[in-house]
Length: 456
Image (cartoon, rainbow, N blue to C red; front, side):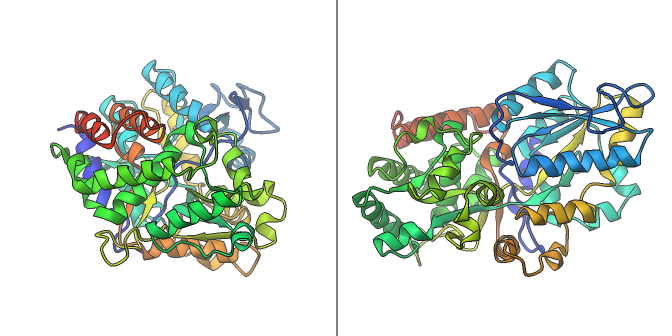
């Protein structure tokens, strides 16, 4: 059996009926353009610090998440002189290419940062990652302390191949309250409201929506929400179940038509297809008031807080779950959300026994109280049961409670399409999504192209 099939069957069960579903489309990369490497410890020289060398760890750059990841490794190294980790950081989009190439050549890091789902299933298929099921059996508290929903994307053929980690980050509908005040408008409650707002904001010289369209997966978030609202999560579930022509559902054509309707109406900031998410330029368009709204991951809150001046601290940032498309007629539940159920750490099967032991020792320290507090301090919700008890009443408390509430209240929490699908099918998906937004394919052509890679 193709190991991806079991991973796909986990899709619809990611968050239904559990205390809280974790999500992260991927922590958006920062402004770096090249990888950076560090010994991760003041006491360990690069490449040294342990007998036989340090275990290696690759993860994403981009603040404020980067500092939390670095600090976690540094604290581990300081407490474990005989078990050291050496980390290397990469921006989001370049990491996806680098890690695939390195693993294919048998030269990947000991610890692999990832998104789970179809990508992880591909690693399993190629015998590139360690089965962590025995480790969880030996350390049952490491499973019970995490949200049950986070293990769906970590599991292939009923075995766990990744440690759910970091934060809960669903995709959020953000808006600039000052921009709305300028046109005397309220946040949308339907697709008709969205299209009406497009006209209002354009008439005032404000872009309706910011979008880092060059990164492609940012465009995808629009499709994920629209299809869920219009037709329900079962349609993409059929794609993952490899049902022939699953993309031919009428709701898909409706979704695609609406996206192009929005593009043709100048719904997105001018030049959106040349803006990258790794640069955070799309966030700047929102917090500087050049755009009124943005659909993006909850992880962007911390970046906007750090870089947006008084935008967050002054109460100018609004946020909500994606609105209904046609209230009363949508098949999808309005509480549903999309994103990834967590970030995932795997161990390379090619690592030495000593390196694997160091990685597992580190895994036991992930999301300790100190790390949880650091995630909370930058406006993120740790992927740990009861994390909401640590929110307090600070300036970020309302947003943290909102994120926790979206996850806990979602009837279905759907994993991001490009991470749920196999890497090859995901590339076809992303390529066609870019062409859709650039009006280079018709909705029917898009459906035909995607139907060809179902199950591949």
